[in-house]
Length: 220
Image (cartoon, rainbow, N blue to C red; front, side, top):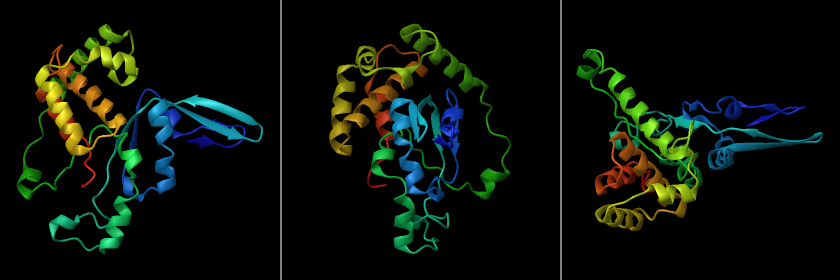
């Protein structure tokens, strides 16, 4: 978060307008992770010391990776060596409040020996073209240097032209996953981004369904 005297920027501010990657998320203290809530929500961090207070910018993209348990195998694999209580404590490092601020959650399975021996994966050049095009659409909508992550709530409402089926899908997902107000708005934001990646002005039920599928479920 930053600190010292006089106050100096921490990693969240050094990652401003960039990416903050936290590897082995479950190894961080819960206090450190909980401190990310305000920066993620407000894009700023306040540091208060005896000689005064300073507010620093920290609008970053958080990318985190974590094993499912301390041994790394996961309870569902049948090979886990962790005590159940230990695995629960490990997962509990990520509180519901912090998880609610994470838009995309993807489970990555252990690759097989055949997959590891395969050739190089497909290059990212094609993906980059789609991302650049989507960012250009967002800049035309929001202004130079801005993207969907920067949208205010009012802008989000104006930019989300949902079809009738998309509204129905969103309502069903909201009820099934018991989304919070923040979670509901973040699904809208991700849906808008998925539509932008596909060059679509309208948000369809498929866009919403994919955004809902990427939310972290409480039972997982």
